[in-house]
Image (cartoon, rainbow, N blue to C red; front, side, top):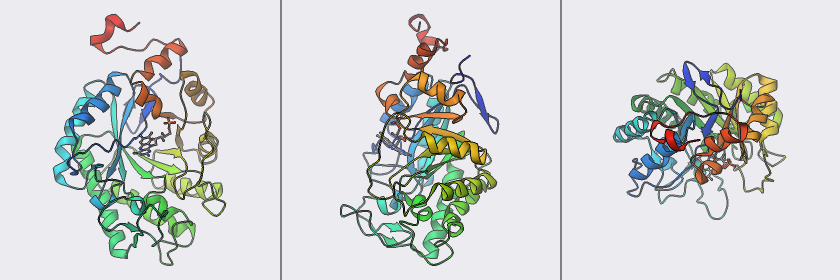
Length: 338
Ligand code: FNR
């Protein structure tokens, strides 16, 4: 039996297979109100029809100023809950479980309004200079993750992923490249972790389901977080009750990333082996055989599929065919599924 198609469980949430639709921003809220649109229903439900086990909704902003663009999805207001609930109902109807990635872009927000970051350092010339967050700004932002978690629960999501990767706000606090603060939220790695620590705690105040955190496990700069720092953060996340670390990389500073099949796997595997936490592998995983190898060799617990699932909503079927596994068909497709 293939491991890719063996169910697995996180705090009582059973995923029918190990395939996760990796969070991917669609920048499709045309009215700039953060609300779900007909596109989102079709886009996410079609991956559920295609038998993806966990459909993760894209980076969704916990504050309007935390959007990457004005067209991002949002969860900063009670008015967002109804659309997200309808989206959950659509995805659940086809047997997938759902997750939402809670996000704040920090200095990587490309908006007309003021933007915020741990320190007033711009990403590059194409980005605005952010305002350094006051302690009050920090408290409000931590609180907005709590409110977002409550809305995610009301909307019926099964899993929350906190976006701590790709140089967005949480990653800006974690990294010495972007966090130049001298207060309790900057300096030592213990202090740089504090923002994420408090966000996890505030999410847990409203949410007792599984929590995943996406991190950039490699910053591609020798002055950035080392593997030792990453292992420290992972240990702390484990103590704080995080169920899975989703191991991505990059985005903290402009840096070129060498990409090849499984380019982020090394660190994912080390995190799993050295801290004994469940991990998600992501990055140029394109075939069923590759995904199966990762799982069978205990290099990760879930595989996150991004661009391959954009190109083919039936990627799970192609992977099952490759592995010689029978995959349940959506009832309507049974006669044409073989
Ligand atoms: C992404 N990615 C991404 N990552 C994330 O954590 N939150 C997000 O909202 C997005 N948005 C996004 C949009 C688009 C169009 C792409 C292609 C990618 C990164 C994505 O989840 C994944 O980590 C990478 O694409 C690498 O995996 P693949 O595509 O090689 O399978």
